[in-house]
Amino acid sequence: MKALCHQGTAVRAMVRKKPDKPAFPNSVEIAIADFDDAPSLRRALEGIDRVFLVTPSSERVEEQQLRFLDLAGRANVKHIVYLSQLHAKEDSPVRFLRYHAAVESALKQSGIAFTNLRPNLYMQGLLLFRQMIATQNQIAAPIGDARVSIVDVRDIAAVAVSALTEDGHDGKPTTSPAPRHSPTQR
Image (cartoon, rainbow, N blue to C red):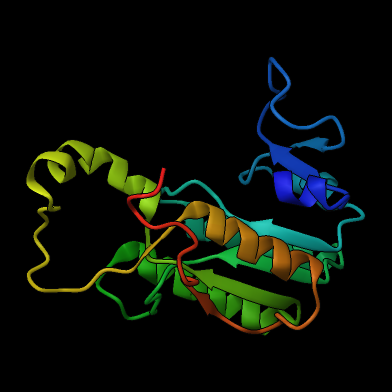
């Protein structure tokens, strides 16, 4: 959001309740809405051309995101940038990969231009392992010899800003970009 505001892009942020203290730059328009409340979503989408879609993870997220896509189509949204997940597949044994695939499929069939961002693991999540990294120079996890791609959330934000503000990103799934920051940089 900061990058969009810095570019002078008009931004409407959807929140469930009005923040007690200013949480956004003054230029950001606040829309009070809830993914479970269709009328509030309709109001939030009025006059919007481009959307960045991300929801909290829950057992209802697929239903919520599909409802949002339907309402976005009715509101004539032109482009949706969707924060999905690497390896999203409808036949995945992993629940959140199945729902991301279902939403990607619905988005593709919606007729709305889209860009799917498909990161894997966020670098900031490694902060939970900082003590282990500092003392043992490793991250222990039950993944065998599997390789894991890690991306900084700031890089995902930069890609989202590009997809929201520039032409040429429609219909292209985007996996984690090359890191801008090494894990040891601070």
